[in-house]
Length: 64
Image (cartoon, rainbow, N blue to C red; front, side, top):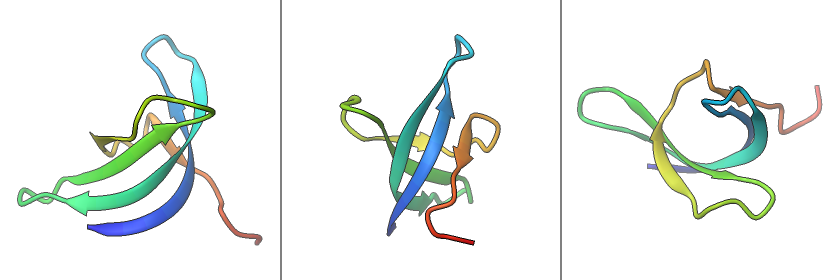
């Protein structure tokens, strides 16, 4: 497991988007990438989700 602070934008099944953050990455024994995700503001507790780049967009956390 690798602890991080990664801002993201998450797409929900209804098509809406919400800001969030990933605070950890983990790769399982099958090679699948998982992220510990929490939506903002005041979203539910952080949960482990399999990373899907189509619905979890990584945002820039530092300047260019």
